[in-house]
Image (cartoon, rainbow, N blue to C red; front, top):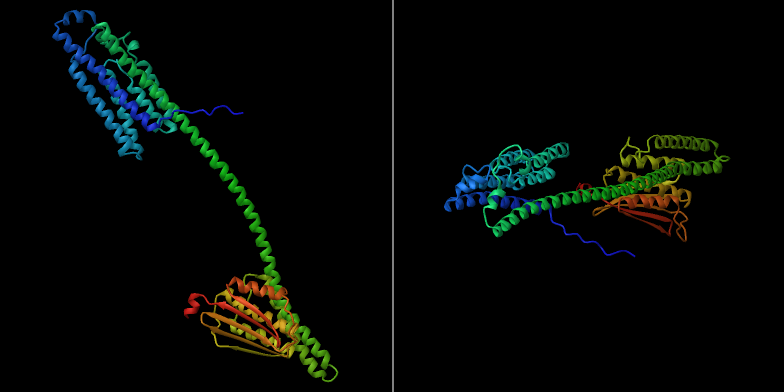
Length: 438
């Protein structure tokens, strides 16, 4: 069972700095005012001789002491404004103002004879907040030593100094208590403000470290996920490449072997009646086989483009259909009213759809006539491959038709397989804007 939740009173670091500045200015002006007002009161009461006989030293001009204290406090405020508001992001200007604060502290200690050294804590707070780590700790050590050895009690042992305590003791006991309480309260508030400032800085640093650790852990988890995604992507790439290789082998070898198979069947049928025609047909089949081997070698060696780049798309289609026509003796008619010049992925899809459709018509449909038509309808390219084969009562997608659909889908097109009166393949591929404009 958890205990009650702890609550902390927190003050922002800028607010603490502002509060310390106000406290130090108030204390400094209070000390100088006590010297000035008490000196004037002593003169008016004509008790200067008695007072001078009871003290070690007095200020040369108490009124100017107050004026100079007011001037130095104004310089502290101006330095703070330059550092905090005007040149916030300019570290050279910030360091210059810190050097000015050091000089102002030395002048103030000399002016009031070390009766108030609280502004050194203000300087230490600025050093903690602004100075970088390389210089922060040496500067802090120097500031702490200055604060320790600028104590009135320590300095007055070696040098005669005018004392605020002597001036307070001039007043009646009740007033002594009031003035002493004000001075010690301001000094204590300044010290407490400095302690709270250090606590807030430490807490802020801890929060920053905790946030860095949280972000580091988050980054580590994200890195692990990225590594997992990279492994998955690599496996997906391997799978995609295997599928690509399978399609390539199916399209090239399948088309060639279909032509060879049909051509060999033709040779067997005419061998006895017309040996010379069978020999001629075998020569055509040999050419198809060699062409198929060349296609396989090209596919395996590059696999960078699914379609040969040595010829234009239309010439590649006509060459492929001519080989199929010669190998099988089937009538294949190709018509096109479109200039077949597209991007590589589009040309590859068009070529493979026609090639696979013709191969299926020969292998499965046992067609004697195949018509291939490529036309344009609006912003779409339409490919129709129709045969007069046996068709099928119910279409079942196979390996070749599945990959035809995948190729067309990647171009955001559609493909339909229509059995009945032979078999018809109809693909619609959207033309890209520049191709549509042409």
